[in-house]
Amino acid sequence: MAARPNILLLQADQLSASALACYGNPFTKTPHIDRLAGTGVVFEGHYCNFPLCAPSRFSMMTGQLASRIGAYDNGAELPSAIPTFAHYLRAQGYRTCLSGKMHFVGADQLHGFDERLTSDIYPGDFAWTADWDAREHTDAGGPDAGVKSGRCTGSVQIDYDEQVAGEACAWFDGLSDGTDAPFLLTVSFTHPHDPF
Image 1 (spheres, rainbow, N blue to C red):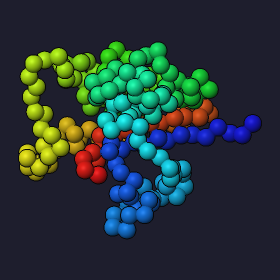
Image 2: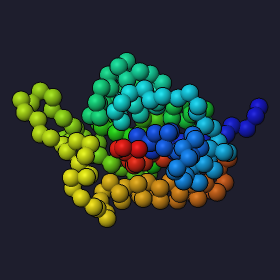
Image 3: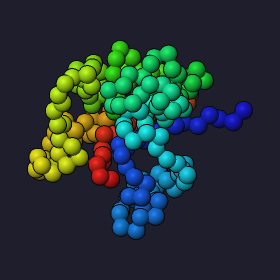
Image 4: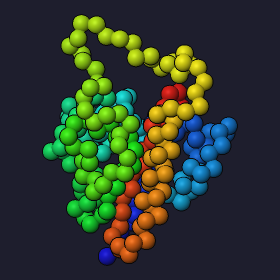
């Protein structure tokens, strides 16, 4: 039997392939991504299954349409009974680890991963999610909220990705613990987000 590969899955929120040099953009400089693309797997005929973060992530993790699992907005809860790729890989003897944003709300913050290195960028409860039955809704800022608020040198959003990367690197460095099991390390960033 061939050796099972280790899997490093990097997710960037709303990063368009057309913004990357490895997909032919002549203006951007993405040397690290280009190097990963040159030695890894590059998907040429891919598309996003849903235009919002959580339903899109849930579709990718489960292999199911967002409508089939009832995920229509970022406050949706991924049912624990629906297996993810982490469940399947763990059942095959993989060490599964998550660092970063997945939009998991509700009690299950692992969804098949053995461990999670960071909290999600949003709380795991439902307090931050929209109440669509309310009579009035407030404007959360819209896509130009960053422009309206001005320049920022630090924030939860900016600092979060640094923590995600740091924790993932530390976990990766700790793999020399003598364990021969293959691993899945999913590293999921909240940036670049709009408009890239």
